[in-house]
Amino acid sequence: MTRTVDDHAAAVAGLLHPLAARPVEPVPVRLAAGRRNATEVRSPADLPAFRNSQMDGYAVRAQSIADVPVTLPVDATVAAGAVAAPLSAGAAMKVMTGAPIPAGADCVVPVEDTTRQPDGHVRIERTRAAGEYVREQGDDVRAGALLVPAETGLRPRHVAALAAVGLTQIEVYRRVRAVVITTGDELTPAGTPLRPGQVYDSNGVALATYLAADGVEVVTVTHAPDEPERLRGLLDDAATRADLVLTSGGISMGDFEVVKATLQPLGGEFGHVAMQPGGPQGLSVLHGIPVLSFPGNPVSTVVSYLVFARPTLRTLAGLDPVAPRTLPLLGELNSTPGKRQFRRGRIAGHGVEPVAGPGSHLIAAMARADVLIDLPADVTAVAAGSDVRVWAL
Ligand SMILES: Nc1nc2c(c(=O)[nH]1)N[C@H]1C(S)=C(S)[C@@H](COP(=O)(O)OP(=O)(O)OC[C@H]3O[C@@H](n4cnc5c(N)ncnc54)[C@H](O)[C@@H]3O)O[C@H]1N2
Ligand code: MOO
Image 1 (spheres, rainbow, N blue to C red):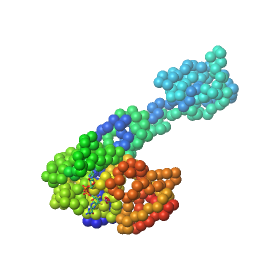
Image 2: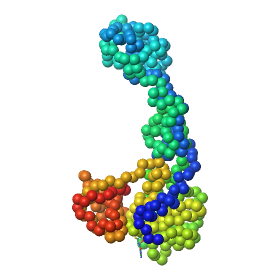
Image 3: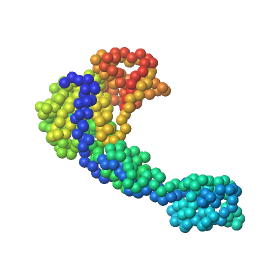
Image 4: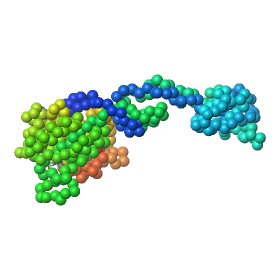
């Protein structure tokens, strides 16, 4: 298998496509942002639920204030949340914003255009037409009308509308559940002393953090030594608990490529994608569950995730896609011919400056970067000032 980035991305998207058909579950509306709803939501009620005032002022009949100034008796004061008695003929009723409009009134005069008299009457200085500053029942949405279409990536604005019509729960697709398995006998978790030759396992936490940011539930982050039987056990277990497995390491040309050794005999495809970092890649299906195998170098793992997994996972979650930007390059870059290269860059002013070299072990340098600079496979050199495409890291 030797592929272009686009071909491998399409293969990954195809492998993940069945994850769109996930079970649905109810979630509290206040936790629904960032989820995708399965079925449309129709409003259970009119919104506004009743005719109410848009201003603090006086509810009147427009014909009572056709000639101004005019002085009217004031029936009562109606607060938001109160019930209004009907308006007497030729009178005004003081109303607060959101208070019900009394029957018999058809407009509101804002308090700024009035003067309260010592005897309790109100002098109205300017005229208003029927309907002015009155919010009609159902003018936002009618009971039974569509509030949120099916398959909407829910955002805070949807949550606001759902809460406004009194809903407390919404049916959304269950999050994609992922297991992350890192491999390599040299790895040890952060927090333990390093013995000679050991390295801290950064790919597990890195992948778990990216997955969570992209709407995925990370079921477990675990580590397998370079023993195929142990890895096979973890993969079998993952398949009972997750929709997706991500592995890191153990897929290139060495003597201990545990991921390749375990999954290739089971039909996994392992080969090279024309990119750097992220050249070695593997794709498998185990017990019906997709397994994406990324190379172990820390930058390669992250770049592989961003290029191949993030787009589909964000779509499945109902999150906005990460869109590229085009910026002038502040500096020069060279690139290996025939490979699409993802260099790290930092936005500075109106351009992007390269950060560190191409090495896929430079994970600390990546922390200083905020974008990937995407250099097409046919590019070998980029001059300062040229436009380059960048992706958020
Ligand atoms: N003869 C060849 N050697 C290599 C090739 C090749 O084509 N021919 N490709 C190189 C490229 S490119 C990459 S990328 C790596 C990928 O190798 P693996 O996926 O098998 O990864 P490992 O060998 O297991 O690890 C590589 C490197 O990354 C460190 N590592 C692994 N896992 C983690 C982790 N969870 N956290 C932090 N660091 C990790 C590991 O210690 C190694 O240093 O192969 C090249 N070799
Ligand atoms: O292609 Mo590897 O992923 O550079 O380091």
